Amino acid sequence: MHTMTAPTAADPARSRDTGGDFLLQPPNPAGRVPSRIDPVDLRRLDLLALLTAAGIAPSAGDRAAIERLSELPGSVHTALHRWLEQAYGFCR
Picture 1 (cartoon, one colour):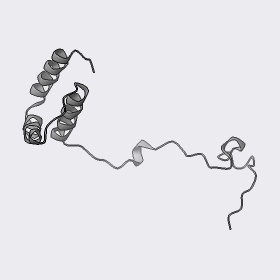
Picture 2 (picture 1 turned 180 degrees about the vertical axis):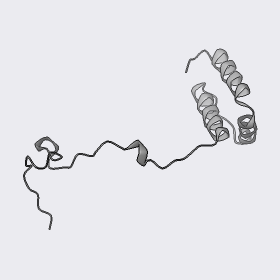
Picture 3 (picture 1 turned 90 degrees about the horizontal axis):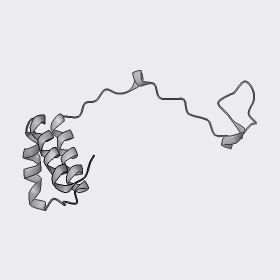
Picture 4 (picture 1 turned 90 degrees about the vertical axis):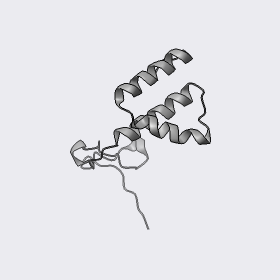
């Protein structure tokens, strides 16, 4: 059986406003698990987001083309973004 006690001065993490819930401590950046996302994956996701924002729904056969475009250097990817943004008149 779970019992609840009233907040006390010795327990500042509890508050009357939270209905007895404990407040979470802010995250500690040093305790994060290091992970890196491959730049190719980032470019692929970014390209898909850009196409979606432009109202262009990639067809089923476009997946291979998107994969190949994502493998190109970042400078090519930047130019592709610029062209799509200019052609479809939207800003990021």
